[in-house]
Image (cartoon, rainbow, N blue to C red):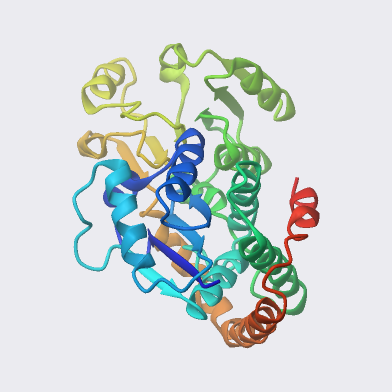
Length: 354
Protein backbone atom coordinates (compact mmCIF):
# COMPACT_ATOMS: atom_id res chain seq x y z
CA UNK A 1 0.00 0.00 0.00
CA UNK A 2 1.98 3.05 -1.23
CA UNK A 3 2.01 6.27 0.80
CA UNK A 4 1.81 9.62 -0.97
CA UNK A 5 1.94 13.18 0.36
CA UNK A 6 0.68 16.16 -1.65
CA UNK A 7 0.63 19.77 -0.53
CA UNK A 8 2.34 23.12 -0.32
CA UNK A 9 4.51 24.82 2.29
CA UNK A 10 6.55 27.92 3.01
CA UNK A 11 9.26 26.37 0.82
CA UNK A 12 7.04 26.33 -2.26
CA UNK A 13 4.56 29.18 -1.91
CA UNK A 14 3.96 32.53 -0.15
CA UNK A 15 1.40 33.07 2.58
CA UNK A 16 -0.97 34.69 0.05
CA UNK A 17 -1.36 31.29 -1.64
CA UNK A 18 -1.12 29.04 1.42
CA UNK A 19 -3.97 30.82 3.18
CA UNK A 20 -6.29 29.97 0.28
CA UNK A 21 -5.63 26.24 0.80
CA UNK A 22 -5.90 26.28 4.62
CA UNK A 23 -8.40 23.95 6.34
CA UNK A 24 -10.38 24.54 9.52
CA UNK A 25 -10.95 21.47 11.74
CA UNK A 26 -14.51 21.20 10.43
CA UNK A 27 -13.28 21.32 6.85
CA UNK A 28 -10.67 18.66 7.60
CA UNK A 29 -13.36 16.21 8.74
CA UNK A 30 -15.42 16.94 5.62
CA UNK A 31 -12.42 16.65 3.30
CA UNK A 32 -11.25 13.35 4.79
CA UNK A 33 -14.70 11.91 4.15
CA UNK A 34 -14.72 13.14 0.57
CA UNK A 35 -11.27 11.72 -0.21
CA UNK A 36 -12.46 8.24 0.72
CA UNK A 37 -16.01 8.54 -0.62
CA UNK A 38 -14.71 9.57 -4.02
CA UNK A 39 -12.33 6.61 -4.06
CA UNK A 40 -9.25 8.83 -4.23
CA UNK A 41 -7.52 7.01 -1.35
CA UNK A 42 -8.28 4.32 1.24
CA UNK A 43 -6.56 6.19 4.07
CA UNK A 44 -5.97 9.92 4.49
CA UNK A 45 -4.73 12.55 6.92
CA UNK A 46 -4.67 16.34 6.52
CA UNK A 47 -2.10 18.60 8.15
CA UNK A 48 -3.00 22.31 7.98
CA UNK A 49 -0.77 24.83 9.78
CA UNK A 50 0.45 28.38 9.21
CA UNK A 51 3.32 27.09 7.10
CA UNK A 52 1.98 24.03 5.30
CA UNK A 53 -1.11 22.26 4.01
CA UNK A 54 -0.55 18.58 3.21
CA UNK A 55 -2.64 15.47 2.52
CA UNK A 56 -1.04 12.14 3.42
CA UNK A 57 -2.77 9.25 1.67
CA UNK A 58 -2.45 5.50 1.20
CA UNK A 59 -4.11 3.12 -1.26
CA UNK A 60 -4.38 -0.66 -1.29
CA UNK A 61 -3.08 -0.83 -4.84
CA UNK A 62 -0.39 1.20 -6.57
CA UNK A 63 -1.93 4.27 -8.22
CA UNK A 64 0.46 6.29 -10.42
CA UNK A 65 -1.99 9.22 -10.64
CA UNK A 66 -2.78 9.46 -6.90
CA UNK A 67 -0.68 12.59 -6.55
CA UNK A 68 -2.50 14.28 -9.42
CA UNK A 69 -5.86 13.29 -7.94
CA UNK A 70 -4.89 14.76 -4.56
CA UNK A 71 -3.68 18.00 -6.15
CA UNK A 72 -6.96 18.29 -8.06
CA UNK A 73 -8.92 17.56 -4.89
CA UNK A 74 -7.13 20.33 -2.98
CA UNK A 75 -7.93 22.83 -5.72
CA UNK A 76 -11.55 21.67 -6.14
CA UNK A 77 -12.28 21.64 -2.41
CA UNK A 78 -11.22 25.26 -2.02
CA UNK A 79 -12.56 26.43 -5.38
CA UNK A 80 -9.11 27.38 -6.63
CA UNK A 81 -7.73 27.19 -10.15
CA UNK A 82 -4.71 24.88 -10.49
CA UNK A 83 -1.86 26.28 -8.39
CA UNK A 84 0.83 28.03 -10.44
CA UNK A 85 4.26 26.58 -11.11
CA UNK A 86 5.63 24.29 -8.44
CA UNK A 87 3.50 25.54 -5.55
CA UNK A 88 2.01 22.06 -5.04
CA UNK A 89 4.36 19.12 -4.60
CA UNK A 90 3.89 15.35 -4.43
CA UNK A 91 6.20 12.78 -2.83
CA UNK A 92 5.87 8.99 -3.13
CA UNK A 93 7.60 6.12 -1.29
CA UNK A 94 10.28 6.35 -0.06
CA UNK A 95 10.46 10.16 -0.42
CA UNK A 96 7.02 10.57 1.19
CA UNK A 97 8.22 8.85 4.36
CA UNK A 98 11.45 10.86 4.37
CA UNK A 99 9.35 14.00 4.06
CA UNK A 100 7.03 13.05 6.94
CA UNK A 101 9.97 12.23 9.20
CA UNK A 102 11.63 15.55 8.33
CA UNK A 103 8.40 17.39 9.13
CA UNK A 104 7.93 15.59 12.46
CA UNK A 105 11.52 16.36 13.50
CA UNK A 106 11.20 20.05 12.67
CA UNK A 107 13.96 20.03 10.06
CA UNK A 108 11.55 20.99 7.27
CA UNK A 109 10.15 23.89 9.33
CA UNK A 110 10.64 27.62 8.87
CA UNK A 111 12.63 27.59 12.11
CA UNK A 112 14.97 24.60 11.86
CA UNK A 113 14.45 22.19 14.75
CA UNK A 114 11.28 23.77 16.18
CA UNK A 115 9.05 21.43 18.15
CA UNK A 116 5.66 23.07 17.65
CA UNK A 117 5.06 21.11 14.43
CA UNK A 118 5.17 17.78 16.28
CA UNK A 119 2.18 18.77 18.40
CA UNK A 120 0.34 19.95 15.30
CA UNK A 121 1.12 16.66 13.54
CA UNK A 122 -0.17 14.66 16.51
CA UNK A 123 -3.36 16.71 16.54
CA UNK A 124 -3.83 16.08 12.80
CA UNK A 125 -3.35 12.35 13.42
CA UNK A 126 -5.84 12.30 16.31
CA UNK A 127 -8.44 14.05 14.17
CA UNK A 128 -7.96 11.68 11.22
CA UNK A 129 -8.02 8.67 13.55
CA UNK A 130 -11.24 9.92 15.18
CA UNK A 131 -12.79 10.24 11.73
CA UNK A 132 -11.71 6.63 11.01
CA UNK A 133 -9.72 7.93 8.04
CA UNK A 134 -6.49 6.13 8.98
CA UNK A 135 -5.75 2.43 8.70
CA UNK A 136 -2.83 0.05 9.04
CA UNK A 137 -0.40 1.96 6.81
CA UNK A 138 -0.88 5.49 8.09
CA UNK A 139 -1.25 4.38 11.70
CA UNK A 140 2.08 2.60 11.64
CA UNK A 141 3.78 5.31 9.58
CA UNK A 142 2.74 8.14 11.88
CA UNK A 143 3.57 6.17 15.02
CA UNK A 144 7.05 5.72 13.56
CA UNK A 145 7.25 9.43 12.71
CA UNK A 146 6.50 10.37 16.34
CA UNK A 147 9.14 7.91 17.55
CA UNK A 148 11.71 9.30 15.12
CA UNK A 149 11.03 12.84 16.35
CA UNK A 150 11.68 11.68 19.91
CA UNK A 151 14.88 9.95 18.83
CA UNK A 152 16.16 13.03 16.99
CA UNK A 153 15.48 15.17 20.05
CA UNK A 154 17.49 12.84 22.29
CA UNK A 155 20.36 11.93 19.94
CA UNK A 156 21.09 15.23 18.18
CA UNK A 157 21.45 18.94 19.02
CA UNK A 158 19.02 20.05 16.30
CA UNK A 159 16.31 21.05 18.79
CA UNK A 160 18.43 22.33 21.66
CA UNK A 161 17.35 25.85 22.45
CA UNK A 162 15.09 25.75 19.42
CA UNK A 163 12.84 28.70 18.69
CA UNK A 164 9.22 28.19 17.71
CA UNK A 165 7.41 30.55 15.37
CA UNK A 166 5.71 32.17 18.35
CA UNK A 167 9.03 32.74 20.10
CA UNK A 168 10.50 34.24 16.95
CA UNK A 169 7.58 36.67 16.97
CA UNK A 170 8.51 37.69 20.51
CA UNK A 171 12.13 38.27 19.51
CA UNK A 172 10.88 40.52 16.74
CA UNK A 173 8.97 42.54 19.34
CA UNK A 174 12.14 42.92 21.37
CA UNK A 175 14.05 44.12 18.33
CA UNK A 176 11.47 46.88 17.80
CA UNK A 177 11.06 48.00 21.42
CA UNK A 178 14.45 46.99 22.92
CA UNK A 179 12.61 45.82 26.03
CA UNK A 180 9.13 44.50 26.69
CA UNK A 181 9.01 45.62 30.33
CA UNK A 182 7.01 48.78 29.66
CA UNK A 183 4.94 47.42 26.78
CA UNK A 184 1.25 46.59 26.83
CA UNK A 185 0.42 43.47 24.82
CA UNK A 186 -2.87 42.33 23.29
CA UNK A 187 -3.23 38.74 22.10
CA UNK A 188 -6.20 38.16 19.79
CA UNK A 189 -7.10 34.48 19.43
CA UNK A 190 -6.14 32.13 22.29
CA UNK A 191 -5.09 29.24 20.08
CA UNK A 192 -1.97 27.13 20.49
CA UNK A 193 0.40 29.54 18.74
CA UNK A 194 -1.05 32.63 20.41
CA UNK A 195 -0.90 30.93 23.81
CA UNK A 196 2.79 30.15 23.34
CA UNK A 197 3.42 33.74 22.22
CA UNK A 198 1.60 35.10 25.26
CA UNK A 199 3.61 32.90 27.62
CA UNK A 200 6.87 33.94 25.96
CA UNK A 201 5.93 37.63 26.14
CA UNK A 202 5.15 37.34 29.83
CA UNK A 203 8.38 35.47 30.53
CA UNK A 204 10.31 38.25 28.76
CA UNK A 205 8.82 40.81 31.13
CA UNK A 206 5.83 42.27 29.31
CA UNK A 207 4.11 44.73 31.65
CA UNK A 208 0.64 43.34 31.00
CA UNK A 209 -1.10 40.94 28.66
CA UNK A 210 -4.67 41.30 27.47
CA UNK A 211 -6.31 38.21 25.98
CA UNK A 212 -9.23 38.36 23.56
CA UNK A 213 -10.83 35.21 22.21
CA UNK A 214 -14.18 34.11 20.76
CA UNK A 215 -14.52 31.75 23.71
CA UNK A 216 -14.43 34.16 26.64
CA UNK A 217 -13.96 31.27 29.08
CA UNK A 218 -10.80 30.30 27.22
CA UNK A 219 -9.57 33.90 27.34
CA UNK A 220 -10.27 34.09 31.09
CA UNK A 221 -8.38 30.85 31.74
CA UNK A 222 -5.31 31.93 29.77
CA UNK A 223 -5.34 35.44 31.25
CA UNK A 224 -5.41 33.95 34.76
CA UNK A 225 -2.35 31.83 33.99
CA UNK A 226 -0.48 34.90 32.72
CA UNK A 227 -1.63 37.24 35.48
CA UNK A 228 -3.29 39.21 32.70
CA UNK A 229 -6.82 40.27 31.87
CA UNK A 230 -9.44 38.82 29.53
CA UNK A 231 -11.48 41.15 27.36
CA UNK A 232 -14.42 40.59 25.04
CA UNK A 233 -13.69 39.44 21.51
CA UNK A 234 -15.89 42.19 20.11
CA UNK A 235 -14.60 44.91 22.45
CA UNK A 236 -10.81 44.72 22.06
CA UNK A 237 -10.84 48.03 20.16
CA UNK A 238 -11.77 49.77 23.42
CA UNK A 239 -8.32 48.81 24.77
CA UNK A 240 -6.47 49.86 21.64
CA UNK A 241 -5.09 53.20 22.89
CA UNK A 242 -3.06 51.56 25.66
CA UNK A 243 -1.68 48.68 23.57
CA UNK A 244 1.83 48.65 22.03
CA UNK A 245 1.96 45.15 20.55
CA UNK A 246 -0.83 43.09 19.00
CA UNK A 247 -0.28 39.42 18.21
CA UNK A 248 -3.17 38.03 16.20
CA UNK A 249 -3.84 34.40 15.34
CA UNK A 250 -7.54 33.70 14.84
CA UNK A 251 -9.45 31.48 12.44
CA UNK A 252 -11.34 34.41 10.93
CA UNK A 253 -12.09 34.10 7.18
CA UNK A 254 -11.52 37.85 6.71
CA UNK A 255 -9.22 40.59 7.98
CA UNK A 256 -9.73 41.36 11.67
CA UNK A 257 -7.98 44.69 11.20
CA UNK A 258 -8.25 46.64 7.94
CA UNK A 259 -6.30 49.75 7.04
CA UNK A 260 -9.41 51.94 7.31
CA UNK A 261 -10.27 50.60 10.77
CA UNK A 262 -6.69 51.01 12.00
CA UNK A 263 -6.46 54.53 10.59
CA UNK A 264 -9.49 55.58 12.62
CA UNK A 265 -8.13 53.92 15.77
CA UNK A 266 -4.77 55.66 15.42
CA UNK A 267 -6.22 59.17 15.58
CA UNK A 268 -6.26 59.19 19.39
CA UNK A 269 -3.00 57.31 19.80
CA UNK A 270 -0.35 59.94 19.13
CA UNK A 271 2.99 58.90 17.67
CA UNK A 272 3.75 55.80 19.73
CA UNK A 273 4.97 52.85 17.66
CA UNK A 274 2.54 49.98 17.12
CA UNK A 275 3.80 46.49 16.32
CA UNK A 276 1.32 44.14 14.63
CA UNK A 277 2.41 40.51 14.40
CA UNK A 278 0.06 38.47 12.22
CA UNK A 279 0.69 34.75 12.70
CA UNK A 280 -2.68 33.68 11.32
CA UNK A 281 -3.37 31.86 8.05
CA UNK A 282 -5.59 33.18 6.52
CA UNK A 283 -4.12 36.52 7.60
CA UNK A 284 -5.86 38.62 10.25
CA UNK A 285 -4.28 41.97 9.42
CA UNK A 286 -4.52 43.88 6.15
CA UNK A 287 -0.91 44.22 4.88
CA UNK A 288 -1.73 47.79 3.77
CA UNK A 289 -1.66 48.73 7.47
CA UNK A 290 2.12 48.72 7.10
CA UNK A 291 1.88 51.93 5.07
CA UNK A 292 0.62 53.90 8.07
CA UNK A 293 3.05 56.02 10.09
CA UNK A 294 4.60 54.35 13.17
CA UNK A 295 2.89 51.04 12.34
CA UNK A 296 4.96 47.90 11.77
CA UNK A 297 3.23 44.82 10.34
CA UNK A 298 4.90 41.42 10.11
CA UNK A 299 3.19 38.26 8.86
CA UNK A 300 4.19 34.63 9.16
CA UNK A 301 6.56 34.80 6.17
CA UNK A 302 8.33 37.85 7.57
CA UNK A 303 9.43 35.74 10.51
CA UNK A 304 11.73 33.85 8.14
CA UNK A 305 14.34 36.59 8.43
CA UNK A 306 14.68 36.15 12.17
CA UNK A 307 14.49 32.37 11.86
CA UNK A 308 17.50 32.51 9.54
CA UNK A 309 19.65 33.80 12.39
CA UNK A 310 19.33 30.41 14.08
CA UNK A 311 19.90 28.36 10.96
CA UNK A 312 23.69 28.27 10.83
CA UNK A 313 24.17 26.90 14.34
CA UNK A 314 21.88 23.98 13.54
CA UNK A 315 23.14 23.10 10.07
CA UNK A 316 25.92 20.97 11.47
CA UNK A 317 23.30 18.63 12.94
CA UNK A 318 21.36 18.20 9.70
CA UNK A 319 23.47 15.40 8.26
CA UNK A 320 23.20 13.41 11.48
CA UNK A 321 19.43 13.84 11.41
CA UNK A 322 19.23 12.80 7.75
CA UNK A 323 21.21 9.63 8.39
CA UNK A 324 18.98 8.75 11.33
CA UNK A 325 15.86 9.40 9.24
CA UNK A 326 17.15 7.24 6.37
CA UNK A 327 17.81 4.36 8.76
CA UNK A 328 14.37 4.59 10.35
CA UNK A 329 12.69 4.97 6.96
CA UNK A 330 14.26 1.71 5.77
CA UNK A 331 13.14 -0.02 8.98
CA UNK A 332 9.58 1.19 8.42
CA UNK A 333 9.48 0.12 4.77
CA UNK A 334 10.74 -3.35 5.71
CA UNK A 335 8.10 -3.58 8.44
CA UNK A 336 5.28 -2.42 6.16
CA UNK A 337 6.23 -5.01 3.56
CA UNK A 338 6.48 -7.77 6.18
CA UNK A 339 3.18 -6.94 7.95
CA UNK A 340 0.99 -5.04 5.46
CA UNK A 341 -2.31 -5.87 7.19
CA UNK A 342 -1.52 -5.22 10.86
CA UNK A 343 -4.16 -2.73 12.01
CA UNK A 344 -3.40 -2.87 15.75
CA UNK A 345 -1.31 0.28 15.47
CA UNK A 346 -1.50 3.95 16.27
CA UNK A 347 -3.63 3.90 19.41
CA UNK A 348 -0.64 3.94 21.75
CA UNK A 349 0.78 7.08 20.16
CA UNK A 350 -2.65 8.69 20.03
CA UNK A 351 -2.93 8.28 23.80
CA UNK A 352 0.65 9.41 24.39
CA UNK A 353 0.07 12.56 22.38
CA UNK A 354 -3.13 13.57 24.16
